[in-house]
Image (cartoon, rainbow, N blue to C red):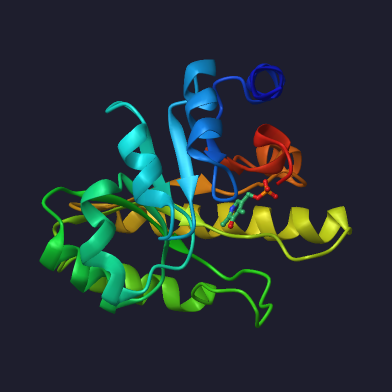
Length: 213
Ligand SMILES: *Cc1c(COP(=O)(O)O)cnc(C)c1O
């Protein structure tokens, strides 16, 4: 089933975006099945269970941390991560600088929808945050990430994804050194088709690919 889902999603995505298989609710066996089907990018949002999957997956699997990362946990996981999608606090960047032995590709999480339950920086704080990130050479900012609001309203979701693209465009003039704001991490099982229309370059798919838990 994972193989069929993957084939279908790959056809829809083409070469526009990187497909990240979100395995947070799935077992090591499921993650390995996804690997065997050809998937090389894996998304985890929980520290628990993640190291076990990382160890089981071959070297060329890339691991994306998509959940909230507490700064006191950074040192335990950072050497096993290739990407962090949820950067929104300088304290986390500081820990990455301190503990990582490699450069970590990071997305700044932006709270476009303004929902108070969402993590991420308000858009107006992103430029200042970006400048602060220049001090951390092991943090490489590659783009922005957002989560769509909890709604069935496609127009509202569209608006959020469109705004993330506009914000990215406005930040490009700051690109230099470790700041290279190019990528858009947006779209999940229910809204990835909308995200693709608005230029997503990384999409994070759990249930539609891995099956519901
Ligand atoms: C769980 C999760 C996903 C995937 O969710 P699905 O709806 O199962 O596709 C994507 N992004 C983040 C940040 C998540 O926590």
